[in-house]
Image (cartoon, rainbow, N blue to C red):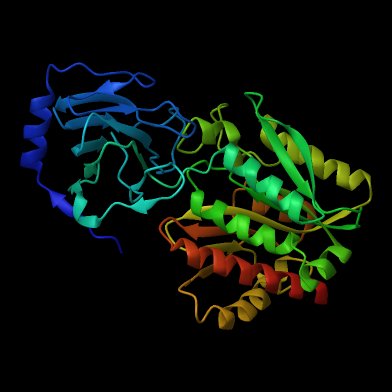
Length: 390
């Protein structure tokens, strides 16, 4: 568990009083203190309005993208551009939300390190977090999670296509017209496995598991080749590019939680997948397995009861095989099997439509990244072995 120092309400009151009368800078405009400037001019940014409180102190108001957001995933991401070496004190004001993600910093926007716990102070109600950051002359990115934006996906897709027999195509476009790529193994196999990623923008740890799992299924190992001789693999790595680029807490730009839109298909992003499923049905091809990658506060699989899928007991057998191989990996996980009441969630919709094993693969927000990748490889390999036996 991550421990934070607790800031007192007295200090909060003094700080808030000190802000009175100072003007705020709106999102999208540079926010200058004496020693540095805070900007949000990049994909994935969410800085909110910004107020310089002192020469080295700023207050950022982190707010959701729209009033329909109910999930507590307060995303933030901004860049500090120093005038000189020194320090910055940044307070994140979450409004009615509470602090969730351990902040991470980067000098290049690519390689990230968590902010040390002793540099993070929380108010008692968790609605403000203050970060004390060391600055040199280089820019410093600060983000709730690593930035994995469409450019990162494009580079990953290209590597997969160069190193395997995978085909890259365009599933369609998002509401704002951004491309939604699709990867698929060659040949029209009758049995299809569908992998979906990044319905929710902040869920970066799930994206890392998606990369490792999907790479394992599409690589050139004997097991993967045998698997693809029987099963077609279709992967949609980034279903919500608009939300990712805009730094949303949860939704697409249509103010919709995409993982509450399955079967309804009111949004172009989910409708594209619905059209894909309809096309498979018309071709007489059968979706047989479905994996949807997400993040939450711990490593967790939302699955289905043993008797609710064809084939039965898939998840029980899958995890029994994976657990011994994870003995040397620090990756505890739980299985939560239930049908669920909301049929517009991807897992439930797919099972209702096809009666097949469908799973929401959740990775903990702060799970060690190397452990998450290694575990995903194990899960992918045991998934393939088990599917080939059924």
